[in-house]
Image (cartoon, rainbow, N blue to C red):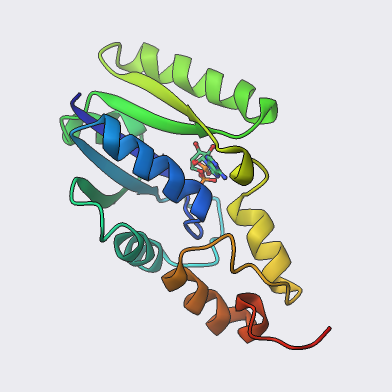
Amino acid sequence: MGIAVYPGSFDPVTNGHMDIVERAAQIFDQVIVAVVINPDKKPLFTMEERVEMIKQACAHLPNVRVGYFSGLLVDFVKQEKANAIIRGLRAVSDFEYEFQMALMNKKLNPDVETVFLTSQSEYAFLSSSLVKEVASFGGDVCHFLPRTVLSRMAEKYGNSVCGKSVTR
Ligand code: ADP
């Protein structure tokens, strides 16, 4: 079904993102997970770190590639000869912004469709920012992140973030 780009900040990639990537990889011939470089945001992980973590988490998916871009998403989509944009929807609160973006991108390039995949209920509450907040207070986030991401979070916040703490 063609090539799809799954764009996002992925700071860091979570199991919620991974669920969307894995399902998209079954629908499309090729999926490109694309890290957005946004100069207005101060990310926890560098662009290189985010790309590397996604590559490791997607190593078992042969039709998934990882890239990055700045500027307009539709330009990156065109450059990659993709025909679809994947976005994940967690809750009604995601909807308005995503709807606006999809309509804008459709105006900018009518040949590209935005395809929404709904989150699985177990990941519907999960966001990178919430995981970072919990980890910053030493909370255990091991159920929410791929294993390779967990070790990087532990480097930043200590071992309690991956369930190794016995303090309670
Ligand atoms: P952005 O800054 O573009 O929102 P994110 O990394 O937060 O970047 O999210 C990228 C995409 O993944 C978005 O479409 C977002 O809705 C989706 N997403 C994030 N977390 C989840 C989740 N837990 N389940 C499903 N989709 C998700």
